[in-house]
Amino acid sequence: MKNSFDELLRRFCDLECDRFLFLTTLLEWKEIPFDVLSGGGKHILVSTRGSKPFLQDHCRKILVAHYDRVPGSPGANDNSAAVFMLLKHIDLLIKADYSHNTLILFTDKEELLEGNSIHDQGAWQLAELWPDSYRDKDLFIVLDMCGIGDTLIWGRTAGKLPGINLSRVNYIYESLKDLLHRYSRREDMDINDLCSDDLGFLLQGLTALQISLLPWKEAQEWKKNTPSQLPGKKIETVENIKKSIRSLPASWQINHSPEDKVGTLDLKSFQIMESFLRDLSRYQIPLP
Image 1 (cartoon, rainbow, N blue to C red):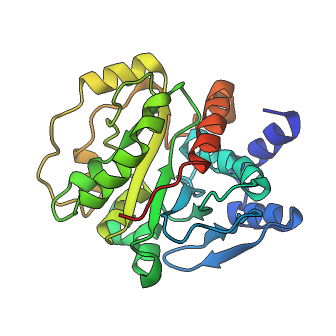
Image 2 (cartoon, helix red, strand yellow; image 1 turned 45 degrees about the vertical axis):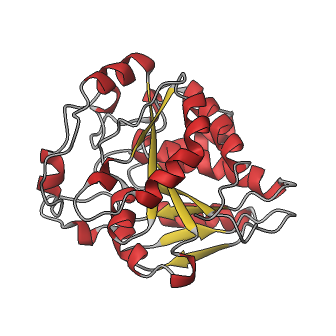
């Protein structure tokens, strides 16, 4: 990370930082167009159109990172790293001389507190308001906890919950499978059973795939202990979500705590995600 980039990230992780104001001010300063969307919070949808128009017969890729954090936590890996990865990626998308069909979405109110319902999640409420004309065209690729590790892992686990139609999610996964495996040492790492914004989108009938990073050894251990199926619980409250989760890999055990600091992040993770996002921008997925 360059010094200026690193300093901005540190300021973003300051406990007193107004993250919404930080992001909107930065985008305005860079003259990047954006819209603030309602729906359970203040979500920021960034326009990234380059010199080429979007392909109308292909999916729109909506790259998502939540910018809120648990109170009292710097939120470096959860989820400032992914936010800054997307901020850097915006520059590539705007300058692209090819049709990338990609938008950036920074979401609010992802972190649910004790006693909250999934209906309190920003993504759930935002998805409820998502335009009907785009519901069958949009693929939400959710980046969460991408600042530590060298191995891409992904999660369709939320889609395995009762009442969610997996056919469209599976179609999108198959379309991206080769790219995903390129960043997971050619292994199937569909192992992330943590829920992020993907859960809210899926429960509202939208298509979502969650992506995270882990160190290789932790990813291998996490995969080894992956259950064959989820408990048949109704995922409605935070308490029920937590009951469905295994013990966390070491790199994630400081999440939601004062120890989730910038100093724990891995420079290599930023380099890997920059390369992955660049490759993803060139992937065109025909409408199913």
